[in-house]
Length: 483
Image 1 (spheres, rainbow, N blue to C red):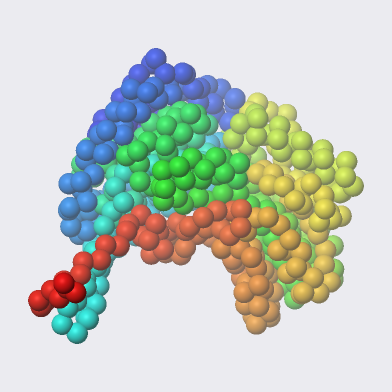
Image 2: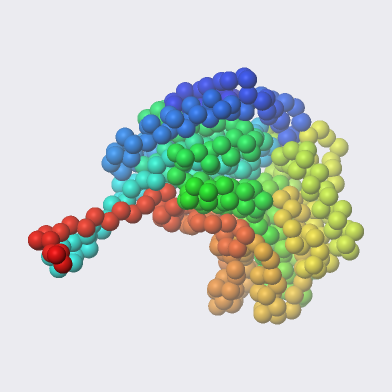
């Protein structure tokens, strides 16, 4: 591995180690080998991170947006220059193939740093004329923010939370998932190298208790979580005790609707991107694929044919296109759903088996004859499993697509553009797609409805979640009073 982080934590501008914290083994999913060990943050480490961030934030918040943005843009340039090394590290951290990490992980993080770095100088207030008196507003940072990351996109998530927080003048203490602890440390290192003052972006390791310590600390003004719905409930409740601002990007069971006038090849590509990219470990995946009856057989046949071209192999080989699950536990969870699908009457068309190789591999699985009440059609699997359901009419498809407690994403494939817009207007989801799927440019808001989350990441919308408005009333005349 190239440029592996040198310690468990990054605090106040430097790597910090405390081996008295519980050891956390970092396992390479492709082989099952232990490639590193980090230590969970002790109370002393947590306090060091929070104290340094709290101390550094005020001066950072008083800098001009132009100065802050310059540092973020410099960090983006460094990240792009080191994309190869960062992509290799991400592959070791997650098991995702280099063919993915080299184009979707550090590059996406760099996009966020560049975008919010460019936006920082534009964060202004407004003047409100009251006919003599006037009010002006100031957009001010929240202060100290806590970020809790997920394991599927560790570099991207570290930047998606860090970039808007820093652009607005905040400090951030970030806890990556204990499953993928390495990549965020390199983000912190690069930010510091780019000129970010010490203490403003700290990374500490640990399990749920470390995250709980962060989100309940009186100095923390805002919490941003990427994770599961059960974790989101706990974080929301804990943050509510301190009336802290919260954004949460949680799970989903997103629908993809394919009408019989859709281009079959494009629709199948959408299914692949929405179910098997990153071995299916993507929160916005369109795992309920509703196909109009006239082309259902054609879609299933072509999907099975295309999946035969997936190359399972060494994730560091640029020719590999499909990697392992992130952990043994995650593979067991997915296998449980595959068994449940068969028990409840769905047909396993292809995949869902363990290849004869070390690591946490599972071949991409296709289920047909799925009904809405089956477990695999209702619960988030977070693995390479797609459920194909059939429908007759547009009204039926929309009603069934929305019949879920989740609302993260939804997509439609059709040649009828007016129908496409009708469907997107009707979808109960925060992020929707027409004739494509699972793209998440930093310029566009990303987030969910219903149980899939609160608030939005990326775009100008994220500025609202990392800043607050102060009104300043200016009296220009004498002050009148009743007595």
